[in-house]
Image (cartoon, rainbow, N blue to C red):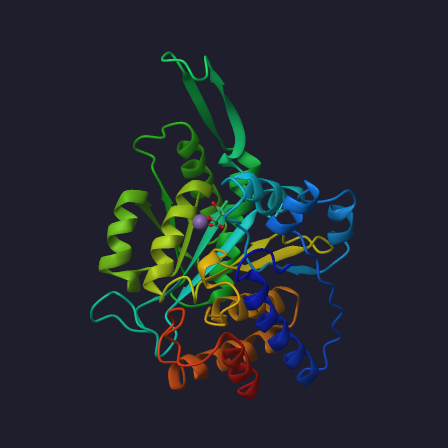
Length: 345
Ligand code: IPM
Ligand code: MN
């Protein structure tokens, strides 16, 4: 699903790499292209046509380029497409690896690839994203607006448990940090805190830690090497992963997965950068984030070797070829970067 703006350009490079690695690893691949996004919405008035969810539901995984269209008001495509798919497929994990690849510049002085290598596990279906709220006396001086943060025991427990399992599987520092705001959000984040403590008892091999979200923003810049895996709520996860994304070299590099761990339900992988309309059609946008999303997709779909192969090829290309990760400054076009990754598989 290429989506809007530069989305289709980067998605094409992801697909190019996917096809190449599938051939090398003898993976049977069936692809279908969907034109959902702003242009189609402007043409037809529909974001996801009837039957779209059922059809998408037949696939093992979805690769999404980007959504966001200059002629569509903010929120419409986000809610109608991205958030909608996260909700209908109950993709309750938003997995955001934060890894500084070799050769990539970070704004942090004196920090390198060994220092910036952690993962954020963001809850992906609750919190202020639940869409609960409303207006009273809208448009008057007495207007009241509410936006409710919803947290459920089931929702936080399944996310926390998945994060513990992931920390164990990752097998690095074996440290899981809960990021929340228990000093102010004394109901919702108390539920998160208590659940975290309870689930932790089942994982004596994992060291646990807690940061308030504001302090986490400070530590992430000062001592990113401290983190191994962070588990956090949807809204805070959204915010801290943009901070983390810039530490790993920016939106051209950062990727994420919207995961439902149940087999038979599609998970959705995407670059974190937006549709970057001003770069559309110029062949200057960085496809590395999308190619990383493809590696995550492969790993999630049971092709760990293929995913690993793509990750290694990416790091050869960033480490030995690309001049920069910024759009237009890579030293190569979008499709040349894709070709370089393919050459290095
Ligand atoms: C993200 C994005 C989305 C979010 C937007 C586009 C709705 O910022 O995936 O982090 O807030 O989750
Ligand atoms: Mn975000």
